[in-house]
Length: 321
Ligand code: PBG
Image (cartoon, rainbow, N blue to C red; front, side, top):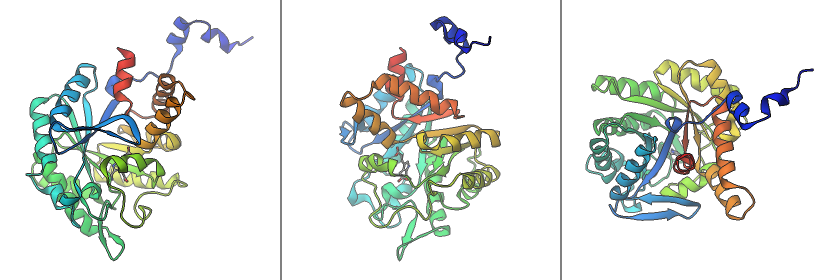
């Protein structure tokens, strides 16, 4: 009789038959940068996650690198007084965020530094593109995203992450980077980025929520699966080095689809709201936090993700060490 339980009878055998194992090198740790160098402020809706000034962030990066996580996605917390309609500080080389990126790359040349290309943290409208009469303009936004990508590349970042969902932006940014000599700067494209409620705590962290309307004219409808293949086909053709699915947990089918259809690495963004759900339930004693984190990260990898952006990166490596 075929008895599948024989392969589960001891931890030793379960270890031998285990199909998926998350490694520290699979993880990308998102970090929120504050302007004040020594500041450290917890995000109310993400208990355990701190926005950090550059001095604190350098320490955090050093510690994570020692534990085997070498990739960081860094987002700026921009004061309202530094925002404007065209997100001009996103391409102002003297802005604290860009200076911090150069410093991080100088101090940790072996790290992989990733940036977000989208207008929302810098824009008074809180949208990823340029707003005119309530509409998000596509091609006009590309020009601003291009300026942003070039200054980020100039800071030496390893990968830029267009998260704006404007049409044709991957090709536009690839050409621009190449024309300016940044042929080695990679593009990790937010390919299938859904208009999700799970970004709420991130928008609290950056104070970047849209001032009016929502993001449904550019981010994807959560009901759509085939459309992700259309987006991925375009990003692939336009030269993306990585395809990303976001959020992760409610979109495991999309991760699986992209993994089986494209021969470039697939990343999944285990987003802020997915962190907060676990944090809140475990604070109440309703879930065992460590088991939940391990199960979730394993399931994201099992579905096909080669890389996982996750706020759990630090506790994951601490559980492991
Ligand atoms: C900005 C951006 C967002 C996230 C990453 N980049 C928010 C949004 O699109 O509204 C969300 C990340 C998270 O929730 O952890 N374009």
